[in-house]
Image 1 (cartoon, helix red, strand yellow):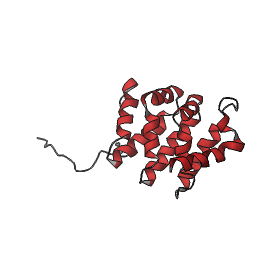
Image 2 (cartoon, one colour; image 1 turned 120 degrees about the vertical axis):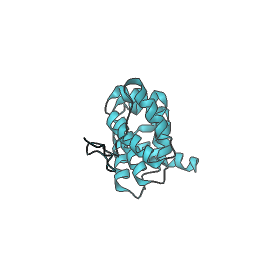
Image 3 (cartoon, helix red, strand yellow; image 1 turned 30 degrees about the horizontal axis):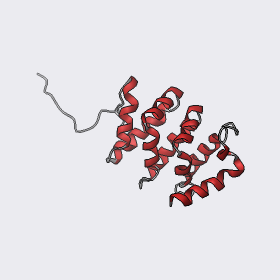
Image 4 (tube, one colour; image 1 turned 120 degrees about the horizontal axis):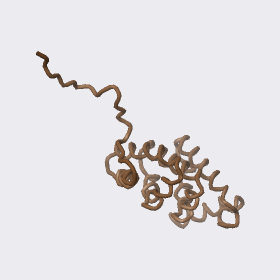
Length: 163
């Protein structure tokens, strides 16, 4: 007769860095609440999952609508390097879509990203640069503060006001 054995090891097909996300319309609200979690691993898993989901413009629209941009803006100030890197990566991916660029303007993400231009992590600075590169693709008549000649002076002015 066979005996049941319970292994102390994880099954080989389970990735501990991957978040278990809900399907359909429940995925992004669940990830948004996980972004606000106190647990570091939960935040990191949610950011990894968001990086995968933000390639679809429909997911970007829903994420902006439920408030993910505000959660991501708060994570830009996180003490953990990986959280900051992944938050800027999510924002960079969102900036590749027109709806994401418009959301950046509405939620004042430009100023929050500008504080990371001098971040000690190279990957974080690269993601910020790529996000700004995609933001510069907006039509110049739509938002006068995004003209390339005025962008950095506008950032410095807003940084001084926020400090």
